[in-house]
Image 1 (cartoon, rainbow, N blue to C red):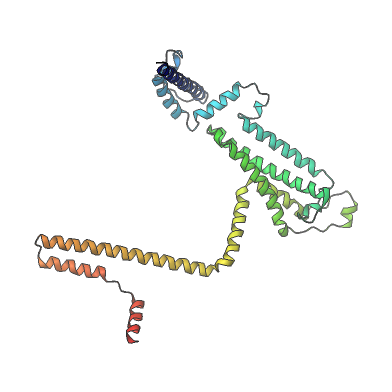
Image 2: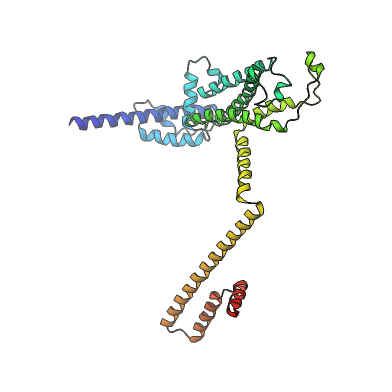
Length: 337
């Protein structure tokens, strides 16, 4: 008896929690629809005018289905997150409607200020920015790499905020994908540094003159190859897929050296396609021949005329015939031998 009472009480709590969740989501969707100026059918949302204790779960399900279609593409879960943020007492809630947005907002601001601050260091200049990862040394090399890392961080955080902003505007942001934005941010850091360092061989070096070395004045921007590496770092941070595609193409190019030339690959592929087409043709002909044989047996059993049977035999002969000139030539040569 105690066990049955316990199960009944547990199911009652589950039903109450479902009912409460439905009621909260319906209220949030109703408020969102009102703010968006949607036309609402009062008869279908009549259940929301009742007290919470008097409304039943079936009525809330009808209201939920109606409002969820009305507020599309926004989802009830995202609207609940926005409502919780609106009721939050956090001092940073003005930075974004969700905690992850606020975190990335702070990361973007810190990255931008770090980029500006590191660029003011005397070791980060026109000459050092043209060095590769193995050319520099000491504290100047560390500051140069930190400058590129800050540039990659700016690009990666900009991409994350840009993507999240689109989902937030539509009301379709899902918190279960929050971890993917952080992993994408780390990939952006790695991609930015790799892209800016791997392409150093394509950067035209700018010779340092004695005048620019002794004077504090910046050289004229007739050629600015030292700006290419920060730009590549920002691009790599913004698009980690770009670096992935570049590395993937390099791997394919290296593999082609061992697999053979492009002509050989095309020839092998064409041979495979021809073999597959011949196998398919043989399968079709054999299937058709079997069907014709079954048809002939059925016609014989039904006492069909001989002219009809001759037509079936003629069609069967045309189907089975597989003219292959090359094979015939080889066979005749074998017979001569």
